[in-house]
Amino acid sequence: MNPTPTPLRLVVLASGRGSNLAAMVRAIRENRLNARIEAVISNKPNAPALDIARNAGIAAVALDHTLFSSRNAFDQQLVAEIDRYAPDWVVLAGFMRILTPVMISRFNNRIINIHPSLLPAFPGLNTHQRALDAAVREHGATVHLVTTEVDAGVPIAQVTIPVRADDTAQSLADRVIHQEHVLFTTVLDWLARGRLTVEDHSVRLDGAILTQPIRLNPFPPADHRDKDGTGTTMNR
Ligand code: GRF
Image 1: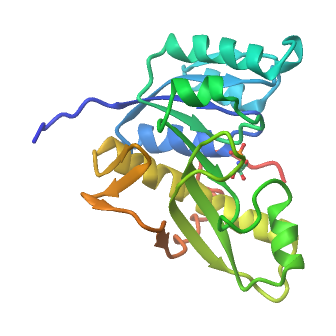
Image 2 (image 1 turned 60 degrees about the vertical axis):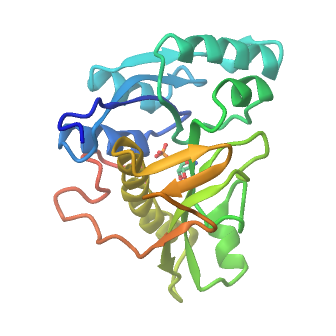
């Protein structure tokens, strides 16, 4: 076995706050994840995620989708930008754009996303309120491969948390986002170690084909110094 494996090359796409990105930056800095974030690209020029990238010395690229005439035109430019960094994986961390076949075919089986629900339940937006409205007893987050259909690619891993009787959408969101941070860095670590492999939509962990997502129990709460587990202060 290679004693010093090459870091996994990542390009992260993010549209907003960037707390999942911050969690990855921190995991890399603390040697919990053998990866390099080559660039962070955002369709929102003012996204806080771009500031997180700059502060970490990572190339920060703004690609304002409103300046493009079509989804295809935007995705063509996005592909060109990503290709400059030759990533092993494209990581969607709160990237609020539906991808066209232009992106999916270029990076087939190499785009991964995190979604704040136990897919296939609650694809799309407002997942926490919808989970409460449906009175589910368990909620959580899913890391999955990305296809052109929203939140519908092969699910790789999920973390579940119990829904409490007094939960609000905000209290659920607060608990789930911490779980997301650990789940996403865990799955990226599996990729970095070569434990998780993807070929023609067959996903293997430690050589065994996944027939359903790996279900993980809730990770311990972040400690008091760092409530969201990212080294950043969350905007609530
Ligand atoms: C997360 O809840 C993620 O699951 C969803 O978008 C949100 C992004 O949050 N896809 P952040 O920007 O990483 O803080």
